[in-house]
Image (cartoon, rainbow, N blue to C red; front, side, top):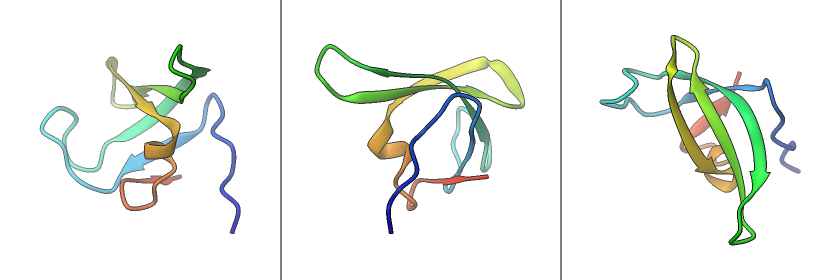
Length: 70
């Protein structure tokens, strides 16, 4: 099964809980970009607190063991 491209505005939920964002936080993709290292990244904002942000490799966000698209 092919994975869908990660795009701005998509929402993902943590499969695991986190100290930073609480249990099963929902994240909104703000930007998708390629780093100077050639890796594709997604910059995310927490839906419940837009001041919380993180940047992940797109491969991590696409990993169904870590995140699920909602």
